[in-house]
Length: 287
Ligand code: YH5
Image 1: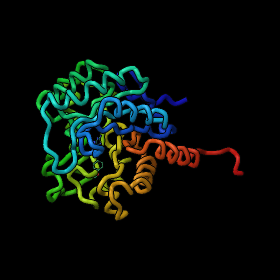
Image 2: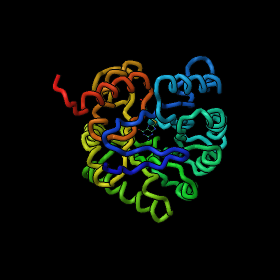
Image 3: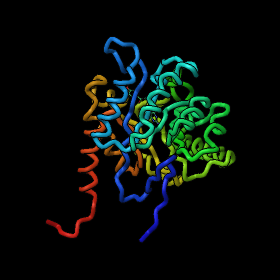
Image 4: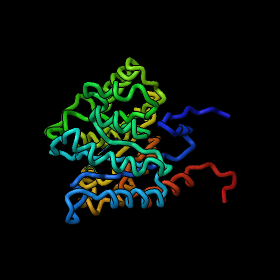
């Protein structure tokens, strides 16, 4: 039997056997822009019940995010982000599912790791001063995302000579930095960052080349397409009508070999991936 490598994921290990379907990462959003139900922020109770719902729906990884990275969003202070993220992290610490924390801030990374996070998901690719040092002395997984510029300005005329080549170079440089910081390759995954400083044609070029990134870097790819503006641009639907488009995008990413798919709609994505997985398996009977 072929031995496939594993992704080291804090307290967990994930097989990278290509015969396995991708893992579903469920988004647990703690930012005010997702809560218009009177309160300005989600309560701890509502965050925990959302996480429990995702677990009942078959989520593999819970991604806890306190900072809004929508285009135009302003940065939070360290203290504000810690106040949002840490209570949820403590409450979910022993829920049995791997926990990812979506942050760019070295202080939040350190606190999250001390509290038991299994992955740090950084939309800024650990480029902040002190970010790699904050994660190096641990076993957490790192999701290295690509973003052009910063959230405030990233959608102002993003330009690339060739988007696939430039991202490949970016990932190679970031992986080299990780290596210099003493971070093992088996802790890394890469993410092209759909919508983070990309036009629709650039996003589509990235989606068609996920397998290229995986092969060029030899690392698992994470893809986050759920409800994004590119789905809206392709379907003409507002954010609440983007489920079907998001499922189609998730299946394309799976077909391109993505190992982790980051989504809002866990139950629907799990079902779609079950059908995809059954249909791609080789069956001995042709019936
Ligand atoms: C990602 O792709 N994205 S936060 C705008 C939307 C819908 C969704 C206008 N964190 C990613 O999800 N981390 C975010 O509609 C991420 N990869 C990784 N690794 C943005 C987001 C969203 C933005």
